[in-house]
Image (tube, rainbow, N blue to C red):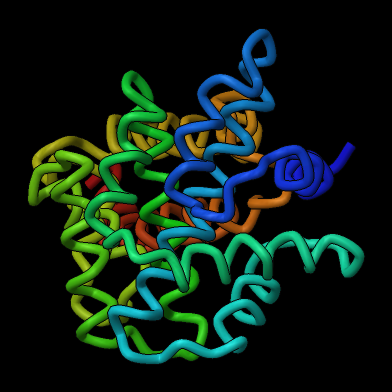
Length: 236
C-alpha cells in the first residue's frame, strides 16, 4: 500500500481538521506499526512545514503543491491527500515554530530523519530554481528548533546552493590533510551511509527517493573535485 493511501486513510479516520492535532495523533494511531508511523510522520512533517514555509515567504499558491509533486513521486490518484494536508497546514493558525517542535518530538532519537526533513524543505524551496531569503530564514529557524549546530546546517545547505566555491572537504566531512587512500575510503563510507536503502531503513518513504539521489549526487561531485585535485599526486 502506498504511503499516500495510508495518509488518506488516516485523514478519513480523523475527526480533527487542525493539522497540529493530527501531528500529535500520529503518535497513537499507528501503535504497533513503527514503520508506518515513521513514514506517515515524516510525510506529514514535510507537507506541513513546506506549507508554513510558503506562507512565511508570502507565496501561498497551489504551485507549492505542484512543486511537491515534481520533486517527490506522488501518484495522480493520491494528490488529493497531499493537497488536503497542505491546505490544513496552510490555514491552521498554529505557527511554524510549533509545528517544528512537534516534528522534533516525533523523532526524539532520530536526528538523521530530522536531517532528511530539512533536505526535503530545501528541495521544495528551490523548486523554482531560486532559494528565496525568507525561505532560507525559515529553514534556518527549523534547523535551530531541531537543535542542529551551525556546521551541520551549513553542510546541509551546501548541498542545495550554488556549486561555486563549495568546499568538497567540508561537504564530505573530510580532513584535507588525509592522504588519497584515506580520503577515498571515507568517500565510499559516505556513499554507503547515504544510499537510498539507508533512508528507507530509517523510516523515510520510498516515494521520497529524490532526497537520497540528490544527496548522493552532491557527495559524488565533491569526490570528483577532490580526486581531480589529489589523484595526480598519488605516487609522486
